[in-house]
Image (cartoon, rainbow, N blue to C red; front, top):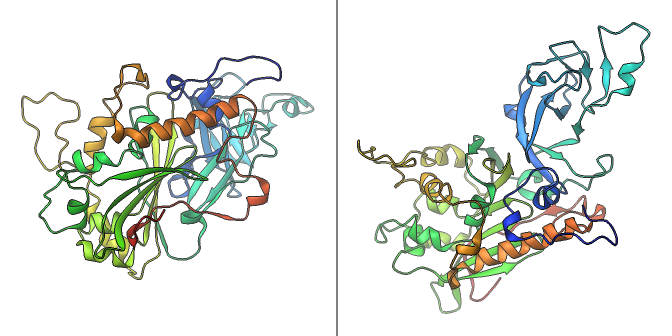
Length: 407
């Protein structure tokens, strides 16, 4: 990180994909709480995780406390993924060194009984907190006094219903996925459907009549607001999708898209927040943690939603089709993977951006500004102050009908 009076290389767009220790983007990411696992997937054995290029191990001790340690024992490097959870910590399987969730060595069975050496050994550890079924870690400076974990409304609000989707790992760069959230025109093109099937989604995101949109900077990051004329001259149909620093996307049209609702259904507005946390494993893969928070009247909403969350494309692969991601048409998820997974790392010197890329241009500007702030030793946008620790963090994802021109 930059020191006072010392000039440093200015972070550039090409730095954004690289998240390892010491990189501009990696150091920026470490200023935030990031998701490293889920409570429902953390069992009675340690779980190896890779986060921002670091090999770590996540576990829950016998008291129910979650801990995040360096994967390799500081003794002779054996993996703690194979360790035993016992006696108040995680014990290395090789020589039995025992570590608590703070990384303090508690025991060295092969050392003399009166040895105090274990008290001098402190293994790599990161503070961990849980919220809404997700496990967050803070990997930045001042680990003993980290910034507050934001109380994201979809995770902290006791009202409504909450559902965690299966954790998914993707084998391409995290930023390819994030940029997608600031690019609403791709919904009309990549995910195009029959515009005459009677559904709101096919009418609104029509390949032949793509809705105009605004890219708007917000306190948490940015949002893209797509619009079409409403049922009266004073109203409009609106679809908002948001990005929150450092790597969160939220959309609100799940119930209309997956239930194939007509446009008239939007009069009541959206009731479900589809919340996606993107955690870079390294420069070539990331993990996606997804939460849905529904506040509408349907007590069986998630049971009805589940069958529509299909992953597979509908068509069978042709015997001569050697493309890695084929077939991909027919599923939003596989369509996204086929495009995002074939983009190279962010080296945009060869790009030719158009006016419809204004959301992508803004998200890059916001992230790059935050990286430069962190690199200069400042608090980047999106890191909460202690005075905001008890406040809900609300992210916009309205889908419905509202007065024309509103934001």
